[in-house]
Image (cartoon, rainbow, N blue to C red; front, top):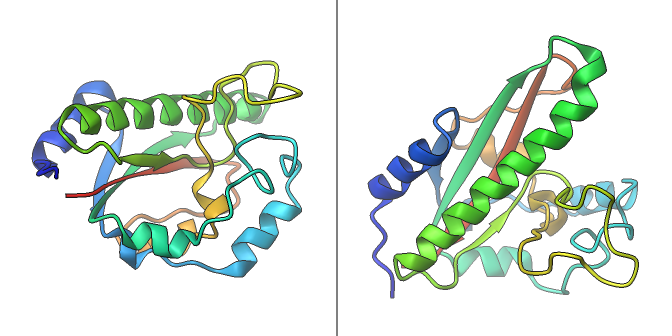
Length: 182
């Protein structure tokens, strides 16, 4: 299997997104809570996004996470100085995080970690006009939100020194996770 050099991966992160924070983590230490999944039910993307619940596979995500040896949180932070730009910043930051996570997956695949997988922060926003009616328009590129797995992103990130605070009207943090086996 892979023997990924974490320092090389972090250097790669800095090359593709110099403003990103890269924090190594142990996927088996992720905190899972049913109340997080329930919050998805009340989200407007529920059953309207192919990568959001209830369209996720019925997997024991806590068990799946424990099958991965290493993880890396990718964090982007934004200052919100103009409330009128919030929606635009929210969408653009989501796509930026998404593309960076896909680049990390590709890097890991090229370094003999073929089961690498990533989860974004918030619903997939790759399609400017929304999800396809019958199926996902980008099945190979779209990714599910980390919180859709039941992972309490805030508590898990806090274990690794990453603070995410609400409300997000002045400061917006975008956090994603990529995991791989060694």
